Amino acid sequence: MNEQPLEFEKPILELEAELEKMRQKADSQEIDLSGEIASVEVKLRETRNRIYANMTPWQRVQIARHVNRPFMLDYISHAFDDFCELHGDRLVGDDRAMPGGLARIGGRSCVVIGHQKGRNTKENLERNFGSAHPEGYRKALRLMELAERFGLPVVSMIDTPGAFPGIGAEERNIAEAIARNLRDMMGLKTPIVAVVLGEGGSGGALGIGVADRILMMENAYYSVISPEGCAAILWKHRKHAPEAAEAMKISAPDLAELGLVDEVIPEPVGGAHHDHAAAAASFAAAVAKQIDALSALSVEDLLEQRYQKYRNAGQWAEV
Picture 1 (tube, rainbow, N blue to C red):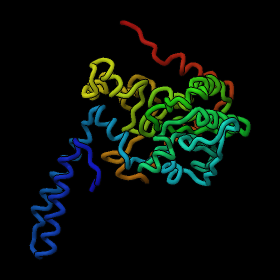
Picture 2 (cartoon, helix red, strand yellow):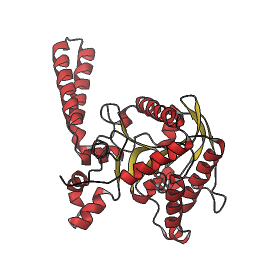
Picture 3 (cartoon, rainbow, N blue to C red):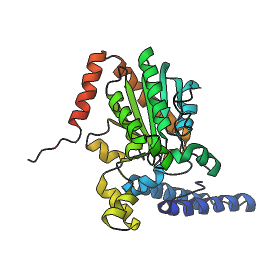
């Protein structure tokens, strides 16, 4: 049973509670309720399929932010082997919101970087709620340059509401740090695979998001602004966030249809927070497949394809 259900999941929770009561009653009173139990199981299955098969973009945003959703280090634990974390940007310090290091996925060595959130107040303070400082982006670039030097592919895991907008980050020039990453990632002479795990917010996501292949978990979102921020600007109230999410086309299916995302990675029914291991298995298979395909290209072809990918992004024509 989902311990922290979202509002639209309440009908599923009610049926799960009813089913549990019937099973307990059948066991404690030693009576046959198999027919009634089977009927509720069918209804539960139908309700679950109906709700999860027809989710709105706003409901996907809620799932993307679920506190029990697997974060970067959860994927490191389940999908990678031999992770060795590397610290520091060699300029200011180490940013705990942006872990990174060496690892293996699908038997292939790689450099992995990404945003890390927390599940409670202590963890969120340590990880700055997944919002990286300038030194986080500079550390990420240092590790990507290390990957280039040794011919290792880069796996970038995006999960942030945005880069940290505080005074200290501005003083240490976060805009320059992100801009430098955008520039240097375009010319990095090694394969880059980026995966949006949950939230892909604004420049904070783009700062490690320039890649040869952009993948998204099924219930992630990727956007220049949050739905609440968009609603506050256009409708002058956050209550219009569901309408904003619909209009902005920020969900994985929408972005794949627009050609801005190369692959949508399927999640367990109801979202990755229901089964971390299954979500990580899908993640690992998709990432390993993309790395194998990109590693077969020459450096010249890799860079040309990356250049054309971004030249073509956003093109449209009236018919």
